[in-house]
Length: 203
Image (cartoon, rainbow, N blue to C red):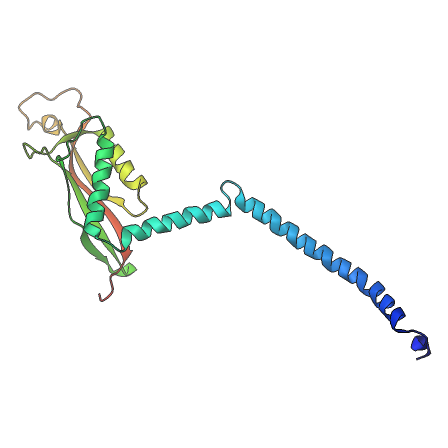
């Protein structure tokens, strides 16, 4: 006890400060290191292609999926969506008139193993005057497929069957002689798009 007998309150404060000051310094240094690491991670996240941009992209994609799968009149949505894609692809090329294509109703197909249902839509192309199938350039068909898929996170091509316009000539069913080459013009026999959504309640 004689060691502390002559220590008054002021000396105790000074001694305590001398002991705690290095400890406090270490704690402040550690806190500074944590702040520096956090700022580095935040700067990295703000970079192009960083976490914040990825979160923003995912948020936009989720919003698109939600608009395509919930709420509103589904029939009107898919008719408007595919009509826009067809007309955008046609552009000024004049491959199709506004009434030369037809978009079917959404047909539901249950996917029991995944507890989901597929919503299918058929696109067909016929001359509005003659009602005969239209022969279309392959470039147009490819561009339409790209536009329909690139503008949506939900609609995907499920089935495509096309027939070359000169196929009858090649197989001898036509009246003309078999041509040495065939034109890159095709008739779309089947074009089906599908989107998958959770199975409706009550099934």
